[in-house]
Length: 451
Image 1 (cartoon, rainbow, N blue to C red):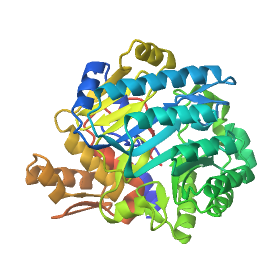
Image 2 (image 1 turned 180 degrees about the vertical axis):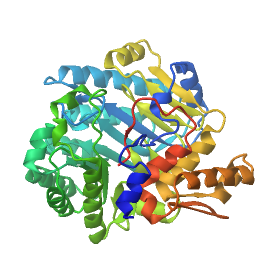
Image 3 (image 1 turned 90 degrees about the horizontal axis):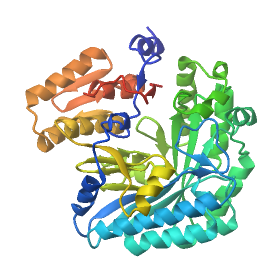
C-alpha cells in the first residue's frame, strides 16, 4: 500500500478539521463573556510582564477573492482615519487597565491592509501604542505588507516607528492564478518591495504563499516557490487555500472546477516542501519553513515553539491582546474577541467601554487538551513528563488517551514511556490527530480541508 493510499484510507482527503490556532477554536466561543471579565483579565497581568499586542486594520483598497478575513473595501481615506481615531481611543482605554511596567514582546499590525495607512496615520498609531507600553529589549514589531499598497513614504514611517520584521503576502506569482483569485501582484513588484525594506536596515522578512489555488500545478508551484526563494525570506508560511464561499461570499468569484483535488493539494504541498528543504530551510510544524538561525528554528530546537492566531511563533508571552474590530485576545484564563463589525466595535469604544463581544473561559480539561494539541501541532509529539508536571491527570489516563489515538491511526503513531509521537509518514495527518484530542462538538462551522 502506498503512503498516499494509507492517508486516503485514514480519511485525509475527506476530513474537514480546524487549523488549531486556538483551543477551543473560535466557533466554540460564546456570547456570555463580556467586557467586565475582559477588563479583569487585563488587571490580572503581572506588573512588569511582557505581553503581545495585535492591532487589526480591516480595510483594503480591493477585496481579493481568495481571502476569508474580516475586511472591507474602501477607496477613500475617510473611514480609515475615523477607524484609527477609534483604535487610538481603545489603546487609551487599555492604558487605564494595564498594570505598570508592562512591555511588548511582540507588536503585530494585521488586516486587511495595514500599509494603506498614510504616513501620518502610521506615526500616530505607533506613538499611541508606545505611549502606553514600550517594546521589550528584544521585542519584534511586525507589519503585514501589501506591495500594491506600499511606497517610500509609508515605509519610512514604519521604519521610523521601529518596525523590525516585515510580512509580505505572496499567494502565487503565476499571472493566470493571480487573475483567478483577484490578486494581481507581479514578482517584480514584490521584489522591489523587499529591496525597499532591506534598504532601510529591516532584515527580518516573512512571506506567505498558498497551495491549493485554482489552476495550480506542480510546475507552476515550482516556479513560484523558486521566485520566492530568490528573495531569501527568513521564514515562509505555506498555507493551504481554504475554499469556504459559504463563509466568504467573495470566494464565489473563484470557479470551483479550477481547484485542485485533495490528492493534488497534497502533491502541491510536497512539491513546495521539497524545494524549501533543498534550499536549506528547516520545516517548522505543519506549514512553516525558516532559516536555521531564525527565531522559529531556535524555538523548535529548544522546545519553545508555540502556536497562536498568526500561526507559529517563538513568543513566550502568555498574554496576547487584540485591538480593533474582530480581534481576539488570549489570556491564561481564556479568550476574548471584539465585536466583528466595525460599526458595533466603534459604538462600544466611543461609549468608553471595551468592545468584547464573545469569548471563552477555560474550564474542565481545556488547558490540558489545548497544550496536548499545541504540542502535536508544534513538535509532532506529546511529552508525558511535561503534561504530568503541569496538569492534574493520572499517568494511566494519559496513556489510555495515547493508545486510543494510536488505535484510530494505526502505524502512524508511536506510544512509549516518554509519550506519543507522530511518525514521519503520519505528519500529513497532524490536524486530524489533534482533532482526536478535541473534546468539543466537531460539527461546528469554520473547519477546512485537512490538507
